[in-house]
Length: 464
Ligand code: ARG
Image (cartoon, rainbow, N blue to C red; front, side, top):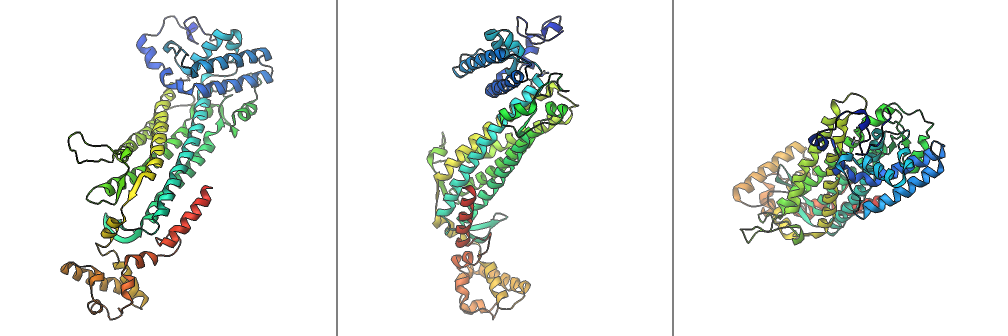
């Protein structure tokens, strides 16, 4: 018996002798979360109907009726007037039922040569393609904001850390550019993922293809897909493209989270390297003195949920035999939440990056502690002919003596310094300054202000 929409609306009810219980109905329905696919579902249906008419599988009149009905449905959805029914299970059946109410048999013919299996796979790909484009735009905004911040602070000195201990002086611009690089790779990953998202499953029908003389390439072209999926079983069943997206999203959030961790540390009054504009912070209900960096903290926390969605999708897929299984309905909520979380986070961070106030004095004071120029002293000795390991040892002795005396290397007199190596002359003092130290690292990828400016120029060109 062919499936048809019964009075109650189930597309498959004629096969059954008893209705599903209310609980099962709720358990199996997806309409309350997949209705967000309505727009792309209609887009896909219109492209399918156009092809059916072009191939003379349905009449031109039926196609015209479908177009008319769909345009009314679009209006109803946009105006919040569309009635979504749990009884109709999902977004696809809700729209199809309404179409049939509006245009009669033409609505019932829309599903010719198609299944909800290839329909939903098409919808998710269309939706995700749009999301990737939005996210790519937001990554660009964030990178541009960070580039501006880096440019303002190409010369600002702060300590660079390893093991959370002062290591060597760096420029703040250079530090910020590290994140611009990370988000740049994230943007590349999104674009790469988009290539595999942008293929058309429609035509695979339930799993084996269809007996109708369809033209899949025509539909692909109408919908802006680069190619059609080449195997019908694969087309309806795999969600690897969504997993790949979630993996890329998890990496973006991981980078956001690392940056957030630094912002939180930098904003701590103990460190005081930056301030974040009030609109990104909140106070405490009990401690009047507090201004908490809520946005970076929340972003750090939300990274956990995005990572979780990746694991959910991987686990969803791993046990499924070919081809479509209802398990796949569970792909949507993790995917949608990943898109929402990432989109909101990037939008806020692009704005917040412009709300960061840098405190150069605090950064400088920190860089002056912790013997940040010890490596420069060692390099100096090497340039005077001492093998690096011997130079390292001589400087270690000097640092140790400074620790004992509670002073910095630059506080030692020439005479005191020469006690550690007679190669030291009075040109050493320039080397031991913070400015001398950063300026000396003047090669591609180095922290010298000159290189930071060149890197910014290069990145701006890339971003267009
Ligand atoms: N709501 C379903 C999903 O998200 C649509 C496909 C249903 N197909 C089926 N044979 N039950 O996957």
